[in-house]
Every structure is written in structure tokens, then in C-alpha cells.
Amino acid sequence: MFPRPIAPLFLFVCSALCAAVAAPRPGNVILIHPDGASLNAWNAYRIASVGPDGHTHWDRLPGVALYRSHFADGLSPTSHGGGTVHAWGVKVVADSYGTDGGRPIKARSGADAPLLVEALRGGLAVGIVQSGQIAEPGTGVFLVSSPKRSDYAGIAAGIVASGAQVILAAGEKYLLPKGARGRHGEGAREDGRDLIAEARAEGYTVVFDREELAAAAAKPEVLKLLGVFAQDATYHALPEEVLAERGLPLFAPAAPSVADMTDAALRVLARTGKRFALVVEEEGTDDFANNQNAAGVFESFRRADAAIGVAREFLRAHPDTLLLTAADSDASGLQVIGLGRQTAPDQPPPRVPATTRLGNPIDGVAGQGSEAFLSGPDREGRRFWFGVTFSSTGDMVGGVVVRAEGLNRERIPVNLDNTDLYVPMWETLFGRELPRCE
Image (cartoon, rainbow, N blue to C red; front, side, top):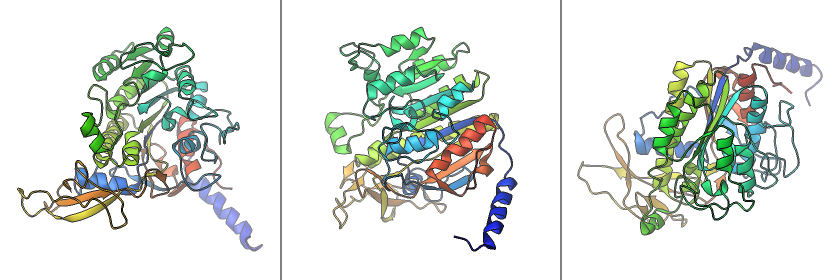
């Protein structure tokens, strides 16, 4: 409690600070969510790709906020709980998919719907982009609520029926009846519904690979687009050794990258002539980390960073747009282990130790105990050998940083609770202010 003379002064200062922030201006919103992407993981990707002194697209975003990730029932994050908090702006228990542990909720705005559904009701356009299967919560929970995260078929049906103008994802098996053969494999739905046929009947153009996506996005008459790019996910999130044994690539070669999908989605949404919200998730950043595959993590980050680059290019042409990128957890606690400087261009790479002294596995380019990664050059041209270790196999509390650029960026606080990510998105879409000081 504040002493009596201080309390009125505090309230006055709080009110003055709130009033000092410029009123929100209406515009578009792009949220890019590389799942599980902590500051440590972004640092590791920078070292691997452009060197310790280089700058990724993520680094060039001028806005910075420190993210606080706890839930109503504990500290350990979950993807579906985190997605719910982002899409509704309220604190829920960790086991929630558009609910509070199965109980109905109201959004921070007072609506009985998540952000993208409220936007649709307000006459705006919306889209989702997902490198994983269609029901992944980082995007799905912005359109659908479910008592169970594992009801993939039910969530998929809700997403297709949502009215979103753009739905680009994988997970064909949740869109087709059991036994029906699709472009990528057999369906798994028990209710006999063919959601792809239903989407076509509602006017969606349906595409199945990178080439078809690019062709559809270039057609001015395409205003509703459904992409179905793999039977499950567009990647194979398994340890490096297992992928090598099975002859599987990190990502399906014919599937579009998350950057390809983001570009196509922005083309379609922009031609609707409406303000829009686009939520993009690279799920591989989380799934590869949770499967202890450092090479897969770096490739996933490369794709996520390319999507940020696509969004920044759109922002330059459409300055009435807010670009945000965030995560809700630190996937598996990734850490870099330095192994010295490269002393000559033809120096053979050292092998990373198999484990840390605590027994945690250390990855090189081909998995545990393999040849070390080589960094990009620093500003003096020096390159460094390194390995990657993980402290767990799940989502953790960690150093998550929100980055931002564009419209209303100045309204984002430096210290940002996970419920607060909703606020700048809602205010930009609707051009009105939500309460801030309590």
C-alpha cells in the first residue's frame, strides 16, 4: 500500500503517462511467432548465419520489449496456453486452447472471441500461416476454441469454417476422411467430412505446393486461399541421426517455406482492400529444439527470419502496418558452446564433445558428437567453431524478447506481460485504446 500522500500522486503520474502516449492509429497487423525462439536461440542463429557481429532481419527491428511468460497456474509455458494468452489478452492456465482450462473466457476487449474472429466480425480481413499442421495453437487458437488441444480434427474444421481469407498450413490428414487419398497421404477424419471440398465450395482456391501457391497468389481474382502443404508438418522434427538413417530432409522440398507463405498471404490480404491481421508461425524452431536437432533449429530460424524480411518489405510499402515478432517460451534451453577460433581456411573441423559435464548432449552439424559448426565471420573476418547443447526436451521459462516495427510501435511497453501482446494488435486493428493503467 502507498502512504496516503503518495497514492494520489502515483495515480496522477500514471494517468499523465497514459495520456502522454499518442492515441492508436488504425492499420494492419502482422504477428510472426517463431515458436520457442528465445534470445539465446536468436543469438545462436546470428552466430551461425551472419557471424557474431552481423545483423539478421530480426536484429534490425527497432522495437524491443522484454516478455514475461507465466500462466495463472504456474511458470512453465505451453504452446496452447501461450497462444490463448496472445489471442485473447487474458491470463489462463497452461492447459488451455482458447479457454481457461476448458472454461469459456472473454477477451481483454470484452469480446467473446479471439482476436482474429473479432476482426472478422468487424469487417476486417484475416489470415494464418503455419509451417506445422493446421491445428497448431500458435495460429489456430486465434480462430478456434477447444476443450482439448488434441482435438486436431475438430480444430481443423473450425479453422476452415472460420471465414479467414487466407489459411496456409500443413496437416492434410485432418482435412480428409479416413481412408481417402489426398495429395500428400491418407486422411484421418472419423466424421467422413472432406474439408478441402467444403473449402472449395465456399470459394477458396486450394493449393498443395510451392509452385501452386506462387501461381495462385499472383492471380488478382484470388481473394480466398487455402494451402495444404504436407500430410502432417512441412518438416521432419527428428534427431539428425534418425533423419540420416531414414533418408529424410529437414523440410519437405516441394512445400513452401514460411517466408513463401507469408509473401503469398500478404498479396492476397492486401488486395481485399480491407485492414487485415496476419498471424504467422514457424513451428520448426520449437519442434527441432525439442528433438535436440541443432541443424534443424538453424534452418527453421533461417526461414523465420526470411519471413520477417518479407514482412519488413511489405511494411516499407505499407507504413500503416504494425509488425510484431514474439515467442511464448524458450524451447529446450538452447545454448552455444564455443570451441575456439578457426586458424586457417583449410583447418579440419573439430568434433564436439558428446555431452557436457552434466551429461547434456552436444550437437554438431550432423548430430551429437559430430563435426563442429563454423560461425559466420565477425567484423575482423574471424570465424569460430562451436557446438549446441540443450538443457531439456520441452518448453521452458527463458529470455524471450518481443521485437516490433511500424505503426503504433511506440505504444508497446519495455516490460511486457504475455497478456499485453494482445493490446497493440487490437488497438491497431480497431484504432481505439484499451485500458492500460490499473
